[in-house]
Amino acid sequence: MKKVNLFIGTLSTGGAERVVSNLSLNLDKDIEKKILLFGQKSRIDYPYEGELIYLDRDSYSNFLSKLKVVLSRIIAVQKIKKIDKHATTISFLEYPNLINTLTSRSGRSIVSVRNHMSTKHNNGFKSKLWNSTIKYLYLKADLIISVSEEIKRDLIDNYNVNADKIKVIYNSYDLQGIREMAKEEIEDKYSGIFNHPVIITVGRLNKQKGHWHLIRAFSKVKEAIPNAKLVILGEGDLESYLNKLASDLNIIDDVHFLGFQKNPFKYIVRSKVFAMSSFHEGFPNALAEAMACGVPVISSDCKSGPREILAPTEFDNENIDYQIDKKRYGILTPVCDGSKYNSKDAISIEELKIADSILSLLKDEKLWNHFSNQSQERIKDFEISKIIKEWESVI
Image (tube, rainbow, N blue to C red; front, side, top):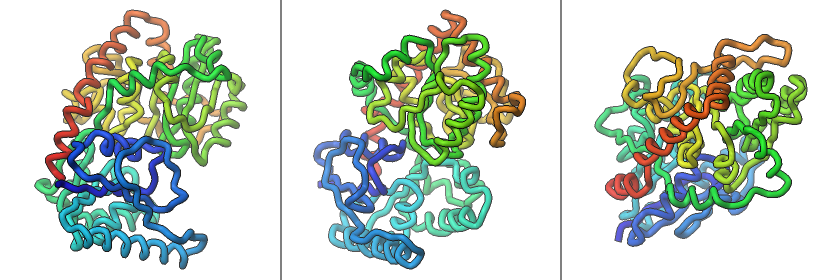
């Protein structure tokens, strides 16, 4: 019998966590599955199949106790691998990948790289540390899975990883399951929002997602369509800043922070436009899941993922046109500059492009229908029954 250890910190809130959930539910039933989590207090927000194994016994509050926990995790994973040398351990995200590579001698180890690392880790001491682990430790893994061709290119060009050691496996989606969940009714307290044209986004409220640019772009949308609403699903450190920005722009009554939702699809399917303003991604689940809901999508052309999804024939183009192109599967916009603008700053060219793209979809029903159809057509390429076979082939 084949055996796999899926190693991730938690099963809550994130895209990588949802991927682990989907893998555990959809891998062949004859594969024995274990899911390695950090601590017993780890949130479980996603469904799963298999045995949960918690690595931590202690919590940590200072540097020494953090170091102790890291060492205990390494020892725990090492023991798990030695007990069953026939199991393949697949890790997701930086911390699990670090531990997986440090214990690679104890059992077959695969790391999954889910972000454009040279963009994510581009400054500061901590970034240097992570870049060093990627460059020197990932080589110890038996295989590296990247979720996009652009990430593979990044690993080769910036971390000197041998191309033969990397396999690209795109994220996959249970399209039927998403559409069933999308049928669920919205809570009464939120249902009134969706009686208006809603622009929606999903993602952690952190710097990577650039939500403040989307809020500022939405303020321009409001000038043309006064009853428009912006819905943001997610939790994070920037929530108070984003709230204040919306308040200072006098649109706080029309920007709705609904927190993390186990079922985002029931909100997405009732929205008119999905918009994403990220500075970097891997293979953005939220974007793909919006497409599965049949919603037209707008995304920054960040590295990596959006262009491979929305304009795959233009993947190798050094420069692309950011005009609306019906041959694409959605609308790409230039990446915003990341400056933390306030309400008094003039809207940037990139923010204006987001606003204009949203308005084009909201005002032109034929264009909206076209990109709704494009979303549903493209997402078929990532149906889980097709891609799960690639995962099974490496276990």
